Every structure is written in structure tokens, then in C-alpha cells.
Length: 267
Image 1 (tube, rainbow, N blue to C red):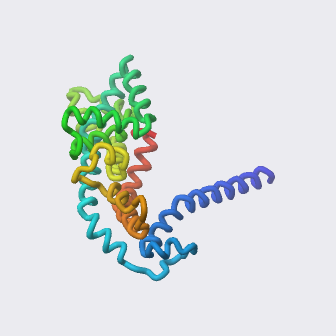
Image 2: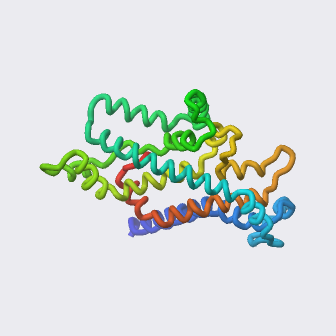
Image 3: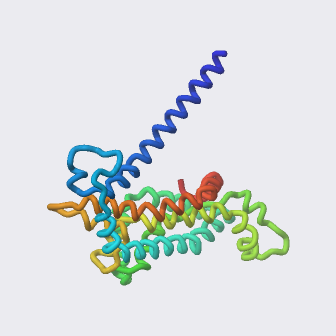
């Protein structure tokens, strides 16, 4: 009986912890959505309204007029980053998993170290390199920069064992066996790569450096001034930035759950 009570208490505790975590994650999103329908004066009135107070669509009108091109830019960068991850990183992950040499350990360790380097440090280094090869203020430069944080470094060994079929070439094995079996892992890589490009701010701010190319993240930043800030527009632009990412995550959630369980992307 004691064990049963402890088990129930632990279940309730885990449930409460999960609920608290869900509230902590969703409440800021809810607050942004509510704030997107309010004026800056209302937002700074000192009172939090659970529903929009004196609701207005002026913020969305401002954002749609000013940020539509920036949304398209973010889509191009996000899709480009996802494509880069699929074309380069997935075959690289297959090779690293198949050919386990001493240099493989060094290479994988280097990739892991690169993942923990602060973005601003990496962005500064890339800016110097891209400036020399004329990739500053360009889509390819930003896509390559975002791709550095969207690189998976392994594929499950079970997939490689299943791919060893007599008579098949290396390309046929990779294209006809590994890719179909690793579909969830590949989709997960693509989704995370897209989100890396879509939500990037540091690389965009550093590498674009005042060019005409401006993703939605920099578009939000333009509303934050030294002397005045249009917080209503910031909230509305934030909603615009969340919608595509949210839809993508909802559509691909079952693939993401399966892909993360397979350990196919960086954690």
C-alpha cells in the first residue's frame, strides 16, 4: 500500500511539474498574442489584461505593411538552411556513422565543440571570412552561417546495418535504404535547420550589416529604438514570426519525436 501511495504521489508530482512547465512556456506566447492587439499606452498602463483591452488592429496593419518582404526573406533563409542541411549534413552524418576511424572521433568532437561556441563569437569569425570572399550582405552567406548550427552528426547504427545489401552500390544503399528508413530523422534535421534559419538574429545582424536584406527577426528589432519603442508593433511582429514555426512544428511533430528518439540530431 505504501508503494502504491508513493507511486501515486510521484505521478501527481510529475503531472504538476509538467503543467507548471507548460504554463511557463505558453504564458509568454499568450501574453504576446494579447499584447499584439493593444496599443503601447495600454501595454504600459500598469495593468495586465487577460483579454485585449481596447483591442485594435493597427499593430497588424503596421506590421503587414512593413514586414511582408522580411517574412519572405526569412522563408528563403529558413528553406535554404534546411536544404543545406539535407544536401551536406545528412550525407556527412551517414559517412561519419559508417566509417568509424580515428579521424572520425576528432571530427565529431570538433563538431560538438563548435555547437557550444557562443553565436556572437562564431558570427564575428564568419564575418571576417565572408568579408574576404564577398559573402557579406548576401543570402548564401547568411544561409551558410545558419547552417553551422543545423548540422547533425550521426545516424543510428541500426539503419546502417539494415542497409548492407549484397550487390547494392554505396549510392544505392544511401538513396534507397538509408534515406527511406531514416525519414523521421531527415525530416527532423530539416525542421530544426529551418527553425535555425527562420529564428536567427545574431548571424543576420552581423553578416547582413545594414544591407537591403532583412529577415523578420531584424524587422522586429527595428521597432526597438533608443528613445521610443513601439511595443504593440513588436508584439504583432512576434506573432507573425511565431505562426510559420508553430504550424511547421505541429505538422511535423510525430516525425520530430521519432527523429529525436533515434538520436539523429544534436541535442
